Every structure is written in C-alpha cells, then in structure tokens.
Length: 289
Image (tube, rainbow, N blue to C red; front, side):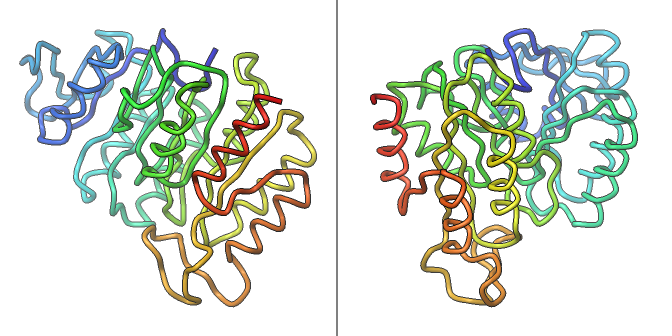
C-alpha cells in the first residue's frame, strides 16, 4: 500500500521541456512512474522524450487522465502554474520549485484549500516516492526498496540518507514536505495518512529547527498515532537567531530549538536520534525486536 502516490497515479509534468523538467522526467519514467503528459505554454501538440506536450493543465488532464502534477518551473512562474493545476482540479500537485515567495505560496494554498480537491506538497521539496511503483519529484529511486516504513521529512538530503540506511527494510512511501515557512502537506497530514495505511507498520519523521511543526506533530501523535514513530530533528548545534539552510529553519530564543522539539517528541513516546544514523539504528532495533 502507499499514501498520496500509488502505482495507478498518472503524472503530468509542468515545465517538462526545461532543463530540470527534462532531467527528472527521465528519472521518474525510469523509476516506473506513469508520466502521461508534459505542460509548457505554447508547446502544445509537440512531444518531448516521447511524451505528449500540452499548452495547459486542463487539456492535458482531459486527454490523458492525469491526476498528479509535478511542478518544475522558475519561482516567478510557480504561482501561476500551481493555480492553473488547482483550477483544473488536479488531485495532487507536487511543487519542487525553490525560492517561491511566501505570498505566492499563501495564494495558491488558499485556492487549493477552498477547492477541496487538490493536495499540495511543497514548495521547495524533493517530492514523494512509493518505491517500485511511482516517483513524483527528484528523490533518487535507486537508493531504496519497497517495504513497510513510512517516512515524512522536511529535508531532502536527510530523506535520502534515511531511505538508504534502512533500504533493507524498505518504505511504503517517503514524502518530502519541504522546509519553507509555509507549506501545503504537513507532518501531521502524512502521519494521519500513514496511520490509516495498512501497508505501513512504522514511521520515521524528520524535522528541523524553527517553527513549531514538530511540537504540533508530537501532540497529534499522542492522540492519534498508534504505530511506532522514530524521529530525527536537525540543528542541535545551530546558533541562536540564525537561519540555517531552509527558509523556515530559524531559532528565536528557546522557541524552535532542536532540544525543545526532541523533548516534546520523547514526552509522547517517540524515540529521537541525535544523528541520522542513530535514528536509523533506533528504527532498525524497533523492527527487529
């Protein structure tokens, strides 16, 4: 089983004919993803890498039955691209683009929530993968195998590391939600989906300094998640008041620190590693016990 992305997902790529879109579309196809269309305004009627290209999302969905969009467009065009996908009624929109202005993100998230039809993952995220079946984004498909661990992460590279270190157990789905201050799908959304997924036995959650998403996730876990959860929080050595990496990773006083998040998670029974490798060992020991 899987969450959000399945073997039946039909994917279109907005910006497929650009450099990043071309590169990662080829990788998605190689991973088994059913990529049915590309969307580039003004290039409708052509093909790219053997895949039909359309000028708009709506016509691409009508012609191909696409229900997932992956957005590879520059930041200044991202808002328009996502709004087009939302207005067309796409079920899942994965926004890979980094550097999207927060106001633009707020605009398309509000439209998506009002529509009630579109789930947005990102922006500034690696996407998600259901190993062996479908890959929507930039996660390397060759570092893991299908299995029964669910993973939700703010960080792209830490997603890859945990998937690699636990590849002998494998993953049901791994979701990179992105590290911007405002995002679509949250830790809690993924935790809920993994809890409800019969194909997921345990969950790895990766957070980082800044904000209170991990504390809110801890409260949700306490009330709603019965499956075992292991976590890692990046940023134990981050200096106070300095943004580290992601736009959302900033600590103000004691709020948003890795230690505060660790304590909140451990209070509700989540085992928290101090390093990614320790986190993998915690999950390994849990599954082997």
